[in-house]
Length: 506
Image 1 (cartoon, rainbow, N blue to C red):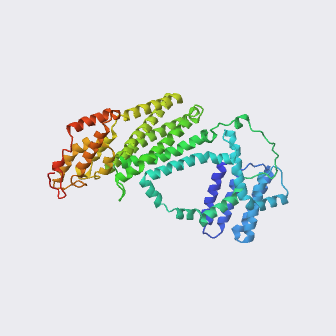
Image 2 (cartoon, rainbow, N blue to C red):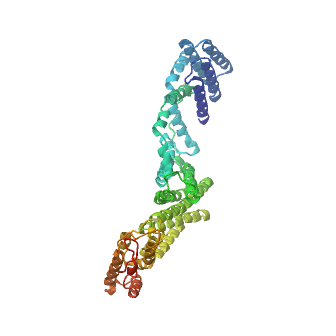
Image 3 (cartoon, helix red, strand yellow):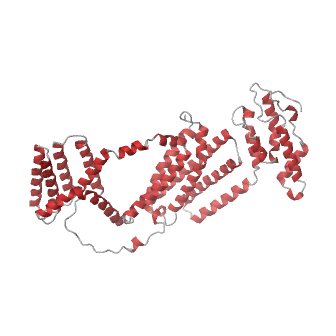
């Protein structure tokens, strides 16, 4: 049926060239001659030699009137001659002239129904190549790849402001207007008119017994919606879609290419950090299904190669997500959620690397599960020793506007909410910030004089009160208590800048 579809498309293109927005003339004779020739080439010639000559004479005689002149009678004669001659060639026994005439008259009306029924037949007979039978199954074979591809595309659009801009720039109503234009309707009409001649059916109705499906056809995989063909289609689509995102990240994120006006690298990075993690997780789940012991990856080297390429792209995607998050943190400061996101992204990237190792070394799925569990345990165990409050306070103050003259101002309200653990960071950087207040840049604290010192000492008092009960002891709190014993009050009170930017004794 593929050849017939290609021939039909060529005839539709020829009809567009000859007829659309043109007056009819010799063009109709040329088109009907081409249609008759293609019909004779693509359909079985069941007629004996004598009837073949009769059909050739009939088509030649039928086209002569429209060569002479185009009118309703000459057009009717040419169309009937084309239909009858095609029917004469396709039949093994000579039909009576009433049968031939009725069949020729039915051809223009039967086109749409024949087109859809032939697609249904092609899908049903596709089972010979071990493809699930039926129109519904054929649609499902593409529905799963296209649906998952749409999910990934939506995640990429939410993660990539450039893709969002390009998508918004597409005039969907204009495209739909073109698709539903008079020209597309003309193509559809021509296709329906010529299809019965491109793919002829015999007038004899053949009785077909109800054939029982074979055991191989009925014994379906419980994951039949993700069969070999669906997996291959999905991986081809996914690799192409991910390649677009990967190329854009390589150009704009890693290569530092200039972004369109009004879009900063920080904004580009911010949009992609979290959606890309979801993308990688969905990709990992699909890979596990594709590479299961009884799956397509175990049977097809092509599927395995596509999976390896896709996993590689996902690893690069996670590295890009880490870089995006770093750029975003550089621009908008660090928080506990963003620190956890760093850890989560490292876990996902590590899981993808383990999937790659498992595929290449042909280890069982149980090994992959155990390896991921060990990696998760080690990562979380190590993270449990990290004092996130200290890391956040040191980073945010060190990269603040008050320290550098660029970036975000210190969000003291957020720092105080982190607890007494931030006190050493406040003591360490406050004198340096105060010194900047005397610089020509006149960078000042966002808070009033003494307010920072007051909050600092308030946190210290709260910590001391909590440590009265020995049951509240911890090694981290013990280290902070030792520090507060040596620095009981804010050491920078005497040099806090005044609103005018000059030091003021307290």
